[in-house]
Length: 163
Image: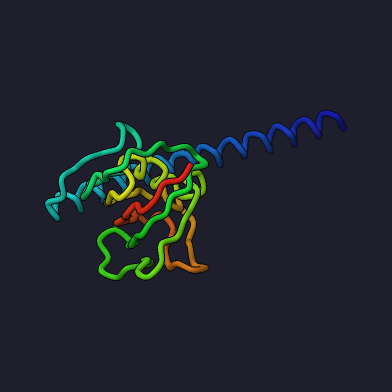
C-alpha cells in the first residue's frame, strides 16, 4: 500500500512539473510577442523609444516631467487623470475627464508602479505596458473590455502625490 501511495505521489509531482514548464514557456513566449508588438507600434508612430530598465519591457514617453519633486513608496497616494487604450486601438477603454481618482501606488498595475515615478507632480507620461505588467493572460470583463495578454497604452497626468 505504501508503494502505491509513493508511485501516485511521484506521478502527481511529475505532472505538476510539466504544467509549470508549459506555463513558463507560454509566459516567455508572451514576453517576446509583447516586446515586438510595442516596439513595432512605437517605430510605426515615430514615438521615441525609451524603456524602463533593461528587462522590464515597459516603454514610456515623458510629455511633461512635472515641477514638484516627489518621493514614491508603495503607500504613496497618487491622484491622476488618465486615458487607457489597448495598444493600437482607436477606442479608449477608460478615461478620466471630470474627475481625478486617487490610488495608492502599490495597488495599481505594475506598469504604473514602475512608470509613474519617472515624473514629478504635475507631470504627464505616456506608458506602453506589456501584458505581464498589466493584467497578464486574464480577461478583464467586469468594467473594462480588455482581453487577456493585451498590451496597453496609457496617457497619465499626475496631479498630486501624497506620502
